[in-house]
Length: 404
Image 1: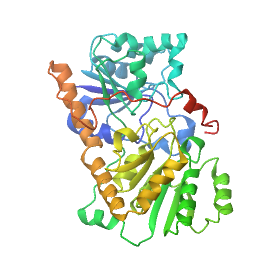
Image 2: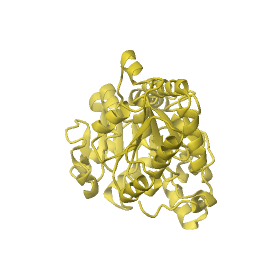
Image 3: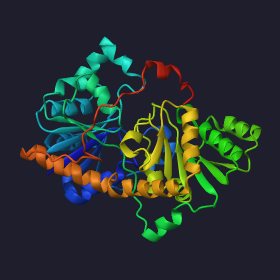
Image 4: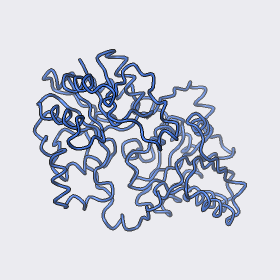
């Protein structure tokens, strides 16, 4: 079977999954990169991502080869390409979508800022061209976020053809002994981590609220805030004004390996992004690092990855009081911390990882190309993407996301 994956450019979250497909298919798997990486990501060190990958092809360097890979593969995986309408890349992809040959699309939300935007006639015309007209063709949707299926259901696209998906950062396996040493012990200092860009939609101030709450409770704890951004000065002032300097470390921006090291040394991970967070791969990484997660239910990854009180705790609609109640519940219950730590690790290690996702996707491809009924798993990647209610219009008015 020949599979081609097309996207704007390859990133570090796609590489583990692509590695699984290449391991299984060898030269029958190809990744087509549509455009060069933008300058902002180059400055962030992304320019070397995938540079030596044997399956990587660049449309802007070899149009004919890449067009052939798109036209003639058995299954096309189609992410967001960024291709301009009418460009040569757009025409080739359009040709493939209309061919009747299987295409599996991968998408985050299309109405992240509010489903009320679906009423726009101009927007609906664009969505018809991109999605709705393929509702009866062998075009399927992998939903990279818990609210994606609801967005597409609203416009009648991909009926009965939407599956749970996501992002799959590198998986780290630990021995039983290593996991045991990562678990919280009664009486020790509670290590807490927050890792994200310091921007409004990520709500880094919740890490400061957490520290203030635990200090007032007389708890022994420490919070690492990992990341940088425009809200750093504001956080520094909050920390100083509340007398929290000895309880919080502003670590700044560090490399992925250092971030994972901090997660591995933490017991609790705070994930406070609002509805603009399409996925949130740090949740995968923190759970893989055996952290008990307290997470905002609005972020795309959370309803897929976190089951309440089984492998994490959640709060809804950005409610500070609800968040602090979850923190209070967790910090006062060492046995619950340990239970969530272990279950979080098992969720990623056993199911939500590139190896499982790749194997299930290949099984699905065999079914749709061979006319075989797909035996859908009940949970995890490639299970049914149920429609979840998303934050409504009035919720969007409560957030100030202008400083990104």
